[in-house]
Image (spheres, rainbow, N blue to C red):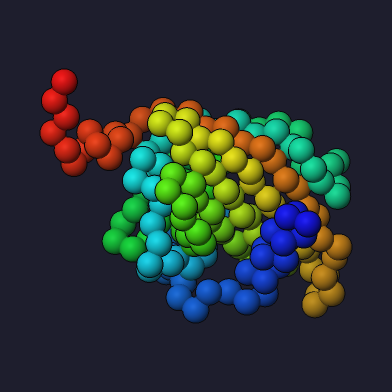
Length: 178
């Protein structure tokens, strides 16, 4: 039942985008730029900002042949004003993310893109635990031939992140005395 709700949420975001969207700068021709709206009222847990090594393992898919069984990436979370950006320097991908829900040290956020007749949405839910995070990453892809959509391709990954760099909030804003 939970997976159906997540799929519905992603489909809703694909076809009914947020009212406000981040504006991208000019990029060289051929560069893939991921874009999504950003919530003005929610922020990621402060300890999540910085650089993370992220491992992912496919746990569920309706088309497992097109998705990697395992992945290893670098994610960099940054905030500039009210825009939160997720960058992967290994793939040169960059996305403004929409923060959907925050509960203490857990966060759910989404990103979406529409490039070359292909819609892709991703919803990530993570629980921050010090210098590690754990969670799931749900990806939904739909391609179009003209205006005719293809069958949805869906994958769910379990993910684990380990901090590579970036200070914890306490170290930045508080004088910690031992």
